Image (tube, rainbow, N blue to C red):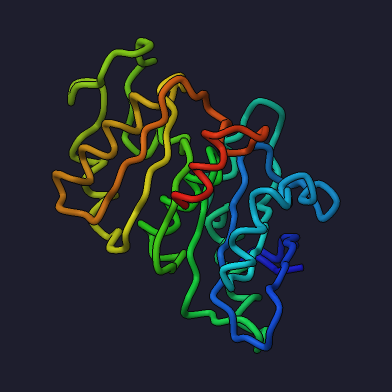
Amino acid sequence: IATSADATPIDYLVRKPTGDGPFPVVVYVHGAPGGNGREGLKHWADPARWTPFLEAGFAVCISDYRGHEPNRPFQVLRGEVNATDDVSAVIAALASDPTLAPDRVAIIGNSLGGVTTLQGTAEGKINARCLVLNAPASFQFVGLRGRPAPGVPLSDDDIDRKAALRRIEPINVPVLFILGTADGLTPINLKLVDLMQAADKDVRLELFPDQGHAFTNGPDSPAFHRAVSQS
């Protein structure tokens, strides 16, 4: 268990490859809800997703973050201490394990976990070698105004471009976006990719036809396996 900046306990799970290490670490930050606890985190520990990483020599950490009221997931990103501090605390806890390499951490963030990763990186609380963002819930990060129409690209009038670019500016690690065309969040994230490209950031997009919001969680499918291999 890690301890966040306000003393909130944060659970996490770790699996390691065979060998002595120190191993590079992939930290997975799941989608809503937060506050899963140790037993709840096992839901995200699907061997089909993580076995390829373990076989490639990576340790895998499944990180929780604080809980929230029903249907109010973005509560976790409010306040002076929030979910970004929770993920930071988990990474700090990993650094105490001599079989892990704390300077060789990559983060995969899914949905709410994706925007938590993005915000924490922008604020300097989360430090990683690279980020993989699976359908991040980036409404607030881009300053979305209103609700996007399905399948319609966003314009600068739909977002707070100046504020979004200000948030993007401190992000100086490679970022991979994995998105499905059938996900309602994809127009928002395509706009975010455009903004990161405009800011000359190291950003890459993998767009999966006909895939929805959670396809990177499975079930077993060619798109799921391709997304894992891209990660």
